[in-house]
Image (cartoon, rainbow, N blue to C red; front, side, top):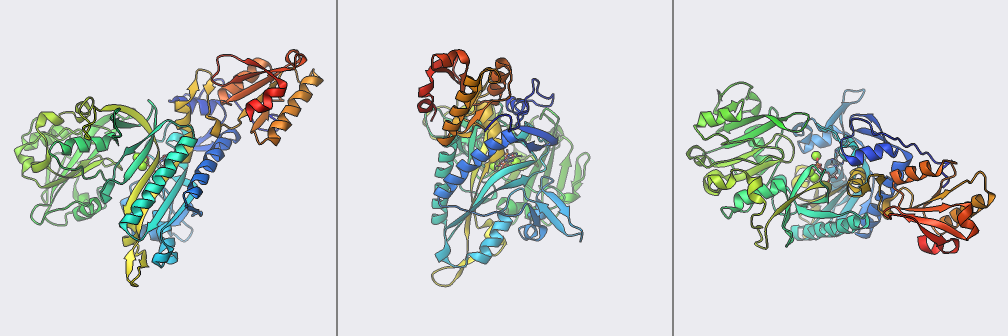
Length: 576
Ligand code: ATP
Ligand code: MG
Ligand code: MG
Ligand code: MG
C-alpha cells in the first residue's frame, strides 16, 4: 500500500471531549471520527485494525467449531415480546416504528432471533450441539456513552450462541468458548484476566468476563495474586457479604424499570424465592452526576402480599402504598426504620453496599437490592440468616482489599479492568420462553440448553491502546496494527536510488505477505516519523541516500529507544 493512495489524517491536538488516552489517540491518529454521541465513523486507518481483530476472532471461533451467520440489525418486536424483553428492557433498547406503525428494535444482542432460528432449524438431538455466531453492528442507548468507541452507542460485537441437549453438554460448550476466548485475547496481544461475573437470574457459576487490565477501566476486579481467584467487584462484594455466613453468593441481576412490572414479575425475573407469607423486595435507583458520582439514591421497599404494581410507587416522602413505601433518600429509610445512618445505602452502581443487621430487617425474608441499572443487584440473600455482623460490611470494598481470598490461598487485591468479552450460561431461559424444543432419543420434546458469548470488537481497539501507548502515540500489538511495517524514504522526490529501493522493498515485503505501507507523501522526516509513531505502526524502516550508499537502512521498532542500522539485504529476513 502506498500512503499517497491511502487516507491519512492526523491531528496535533485531541478534541476536548476525549477523556482517556485511547480516545485521544484514536482521534488524533484519524482512526475514528465522531458523528454523534457514542456514534463514530470508523475511518480507513481504524477500520484496518477492526478487520484484523475480526479476522482473529473469526479464525478462533471457526476453529472452535462455531458456525458463522448474520442476523439483522433491525428486528421485529414480536420476538422480543415473546421473551418479555421488549417491555422489560430499559431505555438502552432502541425501539423504532416502521411506516405501518409496527414496532421494531435495533439489536443490542440477538438471543431472541437466534432462538427463533434454532426452534425452526434444530429439531432433533442429532443436530446438537450447535454454536452460531455473527459479527454485527449493535446499538445500545447507553446512558453515558464515553471513551470513544469503548462505550459507544453503536458498536460492533461478536456474539455467539450455543445450543445443547443437556446441562452437561452445555457445560462443555461453555468451556469450549472459554478456551477459544483465551486464545483470541492471547493472539490479540492483550494483558487480560478472566473473572467470575454476574450470573443474573440464571444463577450458578458459569459466567466469566474477560477483563483487559487498565487503570482507566470502568470495572473493578478483585483478585488473589497467589491463586486463580478473580471476580468482578460487584460479585466479589456479594461473595464477601454472603460467604461471611457460609452461604454461596446467589446472583446479581437485572431489574426491570419500575413502572413496568409487578412484584411477582420481578421476583420471577430474579429467580427470587418469595415465600407464601412474606413477599418483599427492595429496589434502589441511583442518580449519577456527570462524573458518575451518586448524587441521589432512591430506594423502594416493598412488602408485598399481592400483585401491587411497582409503578404505583410515586416520588415523594415516605408514602404508604399497599404495603409498599418509597423514600426520597437513604436517610429517610434509616429514619423510618429507626436504623443507624447508612443502614440501606448508598446501594448501587460500583458502590459498596452498606447494610447493618437490624431487628426490622431481620424480620424480612428474601430481598433484592441494587441500582435500577442493568447488572448490579444482589438477590436472594436472607437478611435474617446471611448477613454478617454490622462492622464486617460497613464498607465491603475496604474490607475486601487485603482480606483472605475466599479460596483461602492468599489475600485479595483490586485492579481496574475493561470488559472486552463475556461468556454466559443461559440455561433454558430463552428456549423455554420461546418454545425452542428438540426431540430427544425417545421422541420427547425438551428445551434446548443455551449459552451466549460476546466480544466487544470495537471496544478492543480502545482497550489495546490503553495498555499499549507512550507519549508519542499508539503502540499496536503486531497482530492488529493497521500496518505492520512502514517504509519511510527520505528525499524520495530527489533521489531515484531511494525511490527505487523503497519501491522494491515495498513490493518484496508485500509479496511475502507483510502488511507494509510505503510513505510516498514526500513529508519531512520529522513529520513523517511523528505520524507513524502516533498511528502506532510497530516496525519502521528508513531509507536514505547516505545509508543506501553503504547498503544499509535504519530499522526501529516502535518500542525501541533508537534506530539500528540494518543491511538492506537483511531487511526481508528481519521483518517477515
Ligand atoms: P458493560 O458492562 O461494559 O456495559 P455489558 O456487560 O453490558 O458491558 P455484554 O452484554 O456482556 O456487555 O456484551 C458483550 C460485550 O460487548 C462486552 O463484553 C463488551 O466488550 C461489549 N460492549 C458492551 N457494551 C458496549 C458498548 N456500549 N460499546 C462498546 N462495546 C460494548
Ligand atoms: Mg452494558
Ligand atoms: Mg458488564
Ligand atoms: Mg457483560
